[in-house]
Image (cartoon, rainbow, N blue to C red; front, side):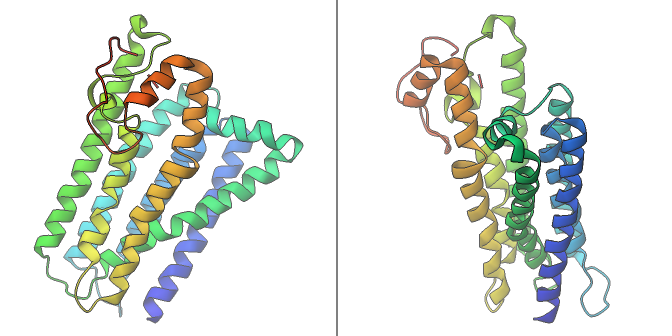
Length: 273
């Protein structure tokens, strides 16, 4: 019990410090895109550290190394992708819209917002912690299933990002909405596969007699809530409606918002986020 409570407190403190650093970078550069970059690497760093957290002075076992490697792989792929995207823009339009609404209080409100983001990320990292510290040190079938789930999520998100990037770089698609590949089945396939990745930790953690394992369910629950209802889909779709108008409304009408599903009707043109 003490190990888990101490781990929880350490996770919360580490994330708060790193997101305070993200606020400093955002204030110095004026580019809020670095917030998401730092958040991704922060979760990866703290998550890997939490996975390898020693128990009773013992060396990390195979599962701890496995879980640390999984979160490090996720963090590296997504963090590099966001960093490259951020380097090519002046500011993230979602955060810019928040700052415009906050007015003169924007710096302070941004600091509070990022600290809330740090607090909200605690369930994600704690899920990693409890998955890595399952009492049975021997790897099980569930561990390999967790690997498959996380790799599927990373590959799916990477494919969605690549399809969107290719669509945007084609001059013929200027002003259109990406309606190709995975984007024909979901308006946000990258978000879906990001959420899907976090199912890996409950799969690894849930075990008979391991009550802490249930805490791992908070990770996919929180990630779904944040992507679908808070900082993911709502501000992005508001931006798309402003920039694409009726084209995006038509896309919304025929395409699932999150879970990949067959479109309600075939589109007649490549209509991209």
